[in-house]
Length: 131
Image (cartoon, rainbow, N blue to C red):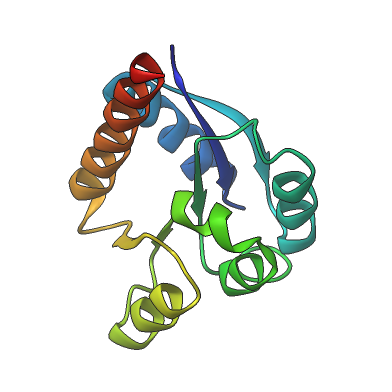
């Protein structure tokens, strides 16, 4: 069963490339996308059981990944990782303080990001078999 992923990314080309990579490496299915903070928050909060992992860019067409993190329910944040070109020490720290599970740089940590997605999927699959 594919890992259902929500993706907040406003660059269409990058979004398509990420979807293909996550599908190929992590057996993931992107169930929804958003280009703005408001659209992301609305979808994530309306569909809490429809996604296993949310991947957020920090800077969107309108709004930020920080704003999304602030507006999510606490337990949902355990399923959120940030993938950004702005993975500065300050941004990483702020994301983690807001409850993100991890922060990865798009240009230098894509392999680690994909590995995180794969591990998350394996953990979910093992948990669902144990139930």
